[in-house]
Length: 360
Image (cartoon, rainbow, N blue to C red):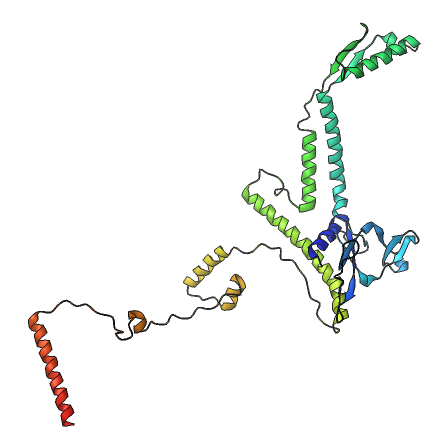
């Protein structure tokens, strides 16, 4: 099954409060497995469904999962529990099966930001195109006769034409003015949007520095650790929910009672700094301690083996000559008298050896 795609869709339950997925089972002739065959909608094994199509029945009806249909209405049709994988998060009790997602806390920051941007755009429109004001005599402004009403309508049309036409006609009794904004808007709308962005970032990723600039390396490192902690918590939530649900059911169906349920988890922690650990281990070794093979394999990998003690090289390996294994030794030349005495001594020793052989 496409585990990454499935968990990506299921993780939206953290935003909405709960998720619903349908488990599509089949058999390979020996075991019950997730169906590897693709359905018409492209799903196989596990299909994450639209959560708004499902409800939980009242306690009087068992409180189980139901599917809203045209025939059943809001009461819904009961769904087989063993065919669905659900989880709920965020609420402070288990009485609410729908959970309390991040969307609940994000509602007001998002609403304030959207409204702030709407007013900001209106302000920028007023700043770029000032409001046009026309001053009329009181008699024309308040008059209800046909002539006064016609003059007022003509002035309105002239004001509307100012923005598009190159020239307009006005009576000399009308005075046209431009009302410009007295404030720049800096420090008001932009600050509101920044505050709301910070609130949204904290709610979703629990920190802001990985999405903003201007922070120090030390602060960014701490905030990155917070982000990794949130990632691990989300991964553990999904994996534990799957272990307690579909994994436990498949184990119970396929194996004997009491068989341990296999656990699935994601490795999200960053690896240790091996260079720092090697430096630390070398310091400990220099103090006279020797690390065990189990520690070496656990820390640096299973492919490590203990090195053998070095074996002394043979004479042949040192000289490269099997017939003359001893390396040649150079000496200082002896005086001729000494050399002659040595040869005479060796000759005398050879004569004694030959005589002893004859006697024997």
